[in-house]
Length: 441
Image (cartoon, rainbow, N blue to C red):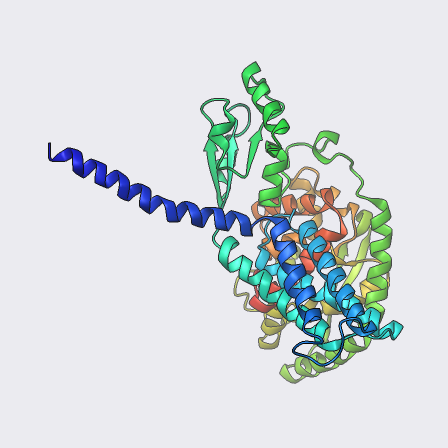
């Protein structure tokens, strides 16, 4: 008799305790919606700075400068949102890494337009727009997204067993074909090539009709890991063995023009680094090495010399850099950590041999070795090599065949999803890599 009231009371307490958690989850879900984030940005970063003119600030709302600033802030929010949504489709990135760069690029582009066209604009409104936009996006990130984990419902047929090895994701294996069971999941994943029972095929069709996202297991695995598995080189795996040629040529022109623009600054850095290398000891300032470039052609790449010259009989060993390699100089260690040692390769970019972004060119002796050990290794030469690349920001420096195999999976991912947005993401993450020294040797 005494147990019944206690159970009833406990149940009420549980429901009372569950109610705030449910409200919190609903609030978090609202803040994660794109429309809510975009609407909030429009109000705080565009409408609010514009409305201050004529109230807290002197002037009138209908002045050309105020109206131009309002329109500019709206366009900047649209550009920044478009950039984030485009870049967020790629793996290995956290929203915190791209919030600030995308906002600065969106608002900065409009500010440059005003400077070049000499149109009147409200400097205070533009400045407040940038500040309020940054505060809004980081508030949403901290409140709703920083600790959020993606959860996927898995249809238990076919080659889905390897998904659970992917970290940072929660996997729910469905026991029955019911959409209600996947209600708490962001999306559903299935192996479309598997022989699915009729009820499970109907389940996937119902999921699509209900607006649920359904991923193919192979593409989802590539998206979450940033790697393309080296099973076989085929149309089914890559879609096309040649990356987008239009962007390939446009990218080369952009690389060349940007290299010309930063050449004076690079010349100053080269002079300072050259003096530091000379003061540390004798030897050339630049290191030259034959490497394999686009289409398998041999090129001579240039780097700041970071190692003492040592004669090694084994060419392969001489071309590798190990952990805490005793050949690295004190100045060289700093240059490697900050990735400044790669800067002289601007010469290769001006010669149209390299790009700012792309798979790293390997030493010729190592490339021959890797090609003999790893199937399809030469396929990575289908695009221009780069100073920084997808493998570098995800894995860092490697040398052994086992590590190179994983690096090649990253390179193949870059080639398969070759696009300006992936390059922009690599630029953002390269800056982080330079600041942290990730993967340097």
